[in-house]
Length: 135
Length: 207
Image (cartoon, rainbow over all chains, first blue to last red; front, side):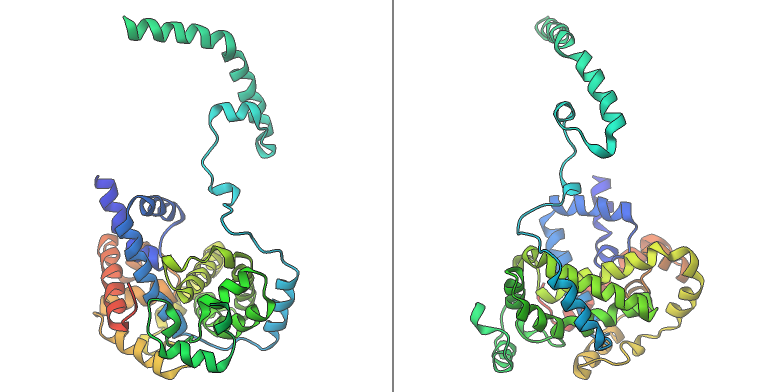
């Protein structure tokens, strides 16, 4: 639990983005398990938002036309859809079915070894497990 | 909901009505959350209004962190486009619309400076350290709001204030702030949290 406490102390730095990328990931994992922390962060973010609005400076007027034009040419994301990277890593057996283009070489290798593992080896393994568990 | 945004008269109603939503937030005003709901449905007029409402705050904080005017414009454009693309992701149950947009803006700004940190670290170090808290916002829209933030920053201890200023306006990590101030990292982490809690209470924002 020392680890959890340590993550907790990062609330201030996290709310100000004053945190390294690995710490950010670690803290966000902590936030999913700690509702109080998530609530606290929300409150701190209301405060930091005010630091931002207090620093307001009008942008050059030409920026608006550029932003509006860019928005008109940009498709919006639907609600609820999670970005690919945020999903949980695949289970080993997903690798047998899905061929990830960016990891083509490695996947081939993995596919081959899993391919050898099943179905013969699974049989041996399960019999060994049976023996080990049943005595 | 959808009917009460986008006109000046309705803004007044929104400002006068107290509530858990950020309608009453000074500095930005208007019902940003309701406008974001319309933007999520592709409403271009609502996005136009959202731009008018948040562009100065976004540009202000981005410029504060990034410094370079051309890059600040680029990042501001990215942030507003992200607001357009991801408006459907805004969840009023998890904080105000202002906080959602400003969080996005600040994070983008920080990501930009960290990705080019190597070459510019030297000049930014001097620049950020030179910014005293009473220089917060040279050209703020609402002087009342600026005054309030300044007063609340003034109520912090010196170490708290310096930590917040260097981290939030300077874009430094807590470890960098610790090294700039010659204070252990653990101390800075604690001071940052204490400072933000005090600011939150002083500014009277919903927690």
